Length: 297
Image 1: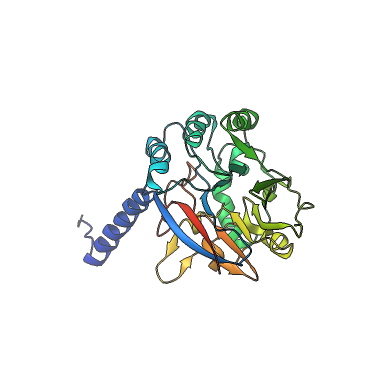
Image 2 (image 1 turned 60 degrees about the horizontal axis):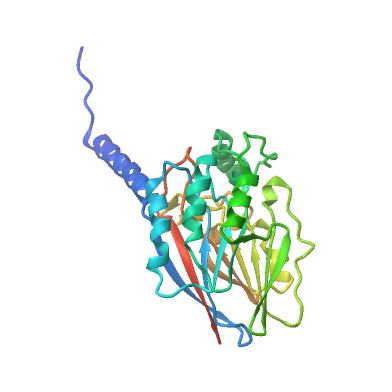
């Protein structure tokens, strides 16, 4: 029997695939802090906002825990606001390390959060299939996986000084400057409300926190200056010269991640810091925490 020979083209393709796979695993743990300047109206106060999202933290992820613990020292000054947009934990083992790290990330005016579906339910292969359903435009049913200890997560965050804005609004008075912080629950769980998507004339700044960015238009049409979202992981796997192949939501591919001017307001979709345990890779979608500096023009 003549042995099968592998041609040089097939061998090179195999090496390239192996290299890309190794890179994708490594990039998923290449955490960084990214700075963006956001030009805003002259009436908006100059603020530094740290945006965190999609940490998907489990107790076994020591590298991400270490990054979160070092994060305060990576910033030159304490931010004015720290805002988190959901999928904070992967399972219950992530609650204590997440809260411990978040407790040490200080803010001058406050720390606020909303939750994503992973904060309510543990990861399943169904989440991976959701990517393919998004590509095929198949509607997804509500998640019915095993539940996480969401009540414990929220109680621990509250004890650490964090404020939830899930389907509700908070106001900050910064020496006479009124700032509105509003948020909503994850729309994919069909628990979200937007009847509080409004602002008053005396408010210098209005910020919305949402997990999945599908409902961004409701907040921008209501006059919000800045909408922060997560969920997409910036596409998680991006092709060179093409960008995101899927957003896992209803947004156009070009809005899969980063800072975008939409009308009079801004949308920042965080690439996030973590991944689901069933898809622990990133390709050209490096994980990040983002420091947004509002610059009145």
